[in-house]
Amino acid sequence: MTAEEFYRKGNEYRRKGDWKHAIDCYLEAVERDPGSPAAEAKKMLDDILNYYNKDAYNP
Image (cartoon, rainbow, N blue to C red; front, top):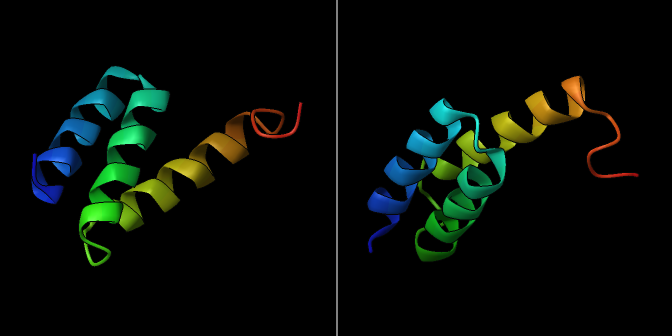
């Protein structure tokens, strides 16, 4: 799959509320293309998760 396809798949997971798979897809997209819009999407998703669930990354 291409970076664009991973980005789109990540967006689909995000819309469904499947945060883990969305982040995984965004990371894969960024790995394949560092200039992908997935980098900004992942940052946005991280900000949202940190705001709503401060203990998600620091249990």
